[in-house]
Amino acid sequence: MRVVAGGTGRSYREAGVDLDAGAEAVRRIGPLVRSTRRSGVVGDIGGFGGLFDPSAAGFQDPLLVSATDGVGTKAEIARLTGRLDTIGRDLVAMCVDDLVCAGATPLFFLDYLAIGHLDPEAVECLVAGIAAGCAEAGCALIGGEMAEHPGVMAADQFDLVGFAVGAVERGRLLDGSAVVAGDLLVALDSPNLRSNGFSLARHLVFDVAGRSLDDSAWEGADRTLADELLAPSVIYAPAVVATLAAHEVHAVAHVTGGGLPGNLPRVLGDAVDAVVDPTTWEVPRIFRELQAMGGVDDDEMARVFNMGVGMVLAVPASGVDDVVATLAAHDRSAWVVGELVPGSGTMTYREVTGA
Image 1: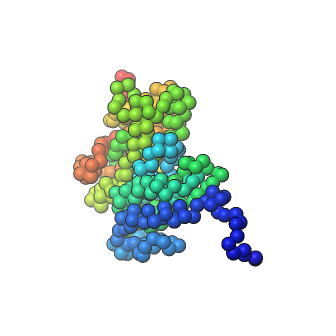
Image 2: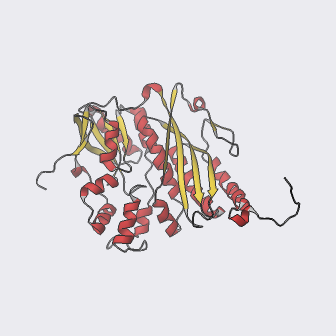
Image 3: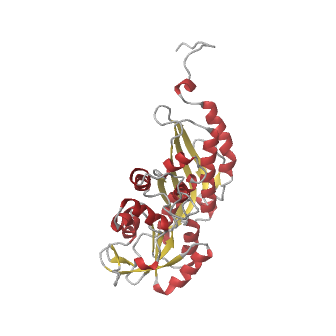
């Protein structure tokens, strides 16, 4: 190959990829990544792979549990508003809260950022949210990837994907086999959409209702639609991990896309049904506002959104009060939302009489 020194040939920057901006972004996020370091992390960032030693984190005979997820089209709301500081927290929540459904403790996290034009300040803001989420979840951010996509994405468009790994001692794995009829279902509250259902939410807000993100969320509200839609996801992992360590829990379900009907049956096996009492909680206002914008029926709302329930634990009836108390001690509002009965692995709502 002939190389011309000092030539004026084409460059990667001319094609839309700025290597210097990439290097500056890496420099900026280094301290954020290191701030999440925890026991078990081996080495520093910058290698070709992140290293983690489960034994140094206290595990004797661990099973590794992995989960990957994204933030869906909530990223578009963040882009439109320029608010990039909390969407990373959503990413962490979607991944680590899947891990605890197997009884696992989150250990480490990796991220992937695709962006139209690599702006170091924007990258720093996005990764700051991821690092904050990792710190809250107790897992280390040990690596990731930034990909600049000129000509494929608009300059300010981006997408985030996360990958989390946790561990559970082999004898403490939650796999649905422990659930029995008579278990009570404990719900953990979700005050907002978290990161699910945003394609429908955006359609209702923009296309159906013709609303602006700067509008009040509802009449008399002191928050805008942007405030409500970008409210960061609750990260349940720390409270659930503490509860699993202290009490007998037979199953954990993370209520994401698909809502309660789509997620609770995933942990039931084929010998019990879940019966949920919808009168035990008040659905947060934002869901009712979205529903009213498009006349969405109740069944469709329930299978798209979490409707105010972000996690469900199946626990023996004798231990339910202690479980609720432990969750409350970790700042998680919880209540008995239903029970397990003999069945075949389905979920139904208890019929509300007099309604």
